[in-house]
Length: 177
Image 1: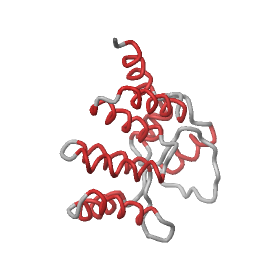
Image 2: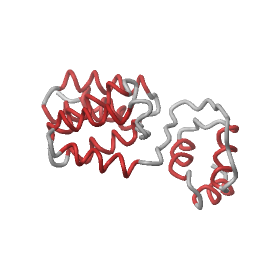
Image 3: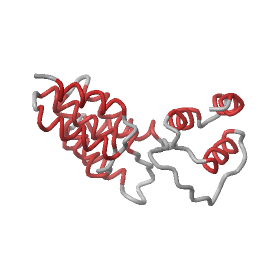
């Protein structure tokens, strides 16, 4: 990544997306230019840009996480249903696969049943999310289900051939006795 772009982006809003996308060489010059303009505070509207394997974060992730935590107090099914409701058009929330991934990771630290249920709902919403497919594989490994973990890692790689985490973990599973 050019140093001038790194400086402009690190000082602005889009640093995570640009840095990660640039690592994999998946951003197009048009996308890069639009994101730099956005990071500078310029108005960027009404553009449709093609950028494979790039996901953007929503502006209301804190509200989504708060709603999710409140619903989770009523159990995994309530949390999953709340996630589905927030993801519907007109809900006033911008649910992305990235926030779902974050919620699954946070839940997995304390409640594997909650993590599994929310992950299943997330995969209903985002069936081609490489990150969510990787999380499913990790949960399968933790449960001792090697064949399903292998299938999930393969699905994650099919969804994003640049997913090195899934590729490395898949290789480890295939090489293990």
